[in-house]
Structures are given as structure tokens and as C-alpha cells.
Image (cartoon, rainbow, N blue to C red; front, side, top):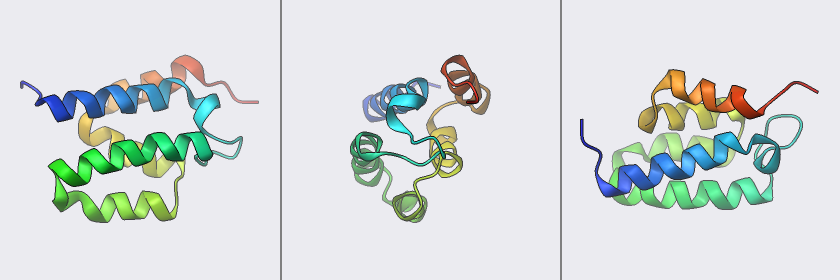
Length: 93
């Protein structure tokens, strides 16, 4: 399956968010201010290209937890890859 340019950009931004967990998330697994900025870029593209996904984006905006981010991420990145990205840079404190 060939990805559209917007989907490639989304995959790149999601990868950046997940591989830099400590930079973009607080210790309790919620997006920090820098993470929210990056997620807003993701949300803007998703809503422009896929307006039918407004509900999931709204849910993440209200509750920006790692679990909700994963729900969005698995739309654009294979689920196994999502967990691999998280596990590559995240270790429990």
C-alpha cells in the first residue's frame, strides 16, 4: 500500500513523538506542552485529510495520554511498530 504524502508526514511526526517519549510526555504518561504542540501538528493534518477522524482527535485533545496517542498512532503506523518505537527509548523509572 502506497502512502499519500500527508500520511507519510503523519507517520514521520508520530514516529518523532513516540521515539522521544521522555521529551514529549510527563512521567505519568500525559503529553507535556512540547508534546501537545507536536500533537496539534498531527491533529491539524489528520483533520484536514481525514475529517471523519474528528472524534478520536477530540478525545486525545481532552485526555492526551499515551494510551489515546497510541489509538491515533495505530491508524498510520503498524501496531507492532508503534510498540517497538515506544520500547526502543522508554524505560520504567
